[in-house]
Structure formats: structure tokens, C-alpha cells
Length: 130
Image (cartoon, rainbow, N blue to C red; front, side, top):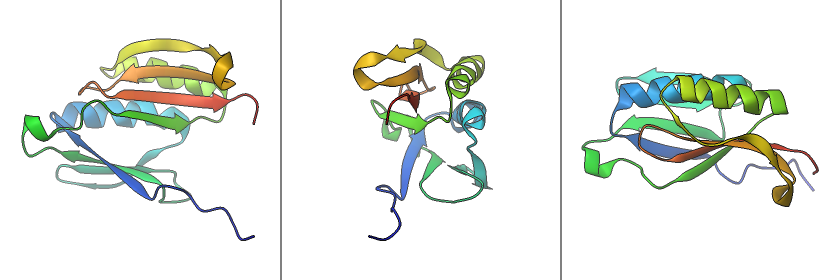
């Protein structure tokens, strides 16, 4: 059996207010070790510094009606502290708390949930038991 491959290569998120969303994602993902590895006008692509996939490409929506809405996107966190910092940073950057950090025993994970500027459900999750 070879090395594990990621199930997803990249995901596109289209923002109605690119600048607000870029502030949100940059702040929220930094505690998880994720940063924008590529930026251009109306685009910021986020990944871990040591690997560029999987990634999330944040892009300016052509019009408000084409913005990504209703999505649930979960990011892996390395610790409970990273989940806590994700939640605080995301709310400080304009996100709206859905669920403060806590242990979700049914998922065997410590998680926090925040709405991004377009209302998408963005989660940081730290698996307690693999």
C-alpha cells in the first residue's frame, strides 16, 4: 500500500465581499497553521506551508447571487488550544459563533463552529480518539 492520498485536492469558496472574507479566513485559519500561499486580485488560496494540497481557494463572486452559501467546511486542528484560538480569531475577524469550543462526545472530537461573512458553517475539529 502506497502513501495516503488526500481525498480532496482543492475547494473553491466564492465570496460576496472578498475583502471581509479574506480577513476572516486569514485570521481563522492562522491558528491551524494554514495561510494564503497564493494571492492575486480577488483570489487567496490557503494551504499548509509544507504542502499545497488540499487547499481552499477563496475567490470574489461575480455577483452576490453566485456567492457560496450553505456550505459546511471543517478544518483539522492539531490541538484543543488551536480550536480555541481558531474560534476567538474567527469571531474577532467578523465571524459569528455557532458553537463555542467544546467536546462533542458523539464525534469523539473537540470542535468549534463559526459562520463566515456569507453564512457558511466553518469548523475547526481536533479528533480526541482516532
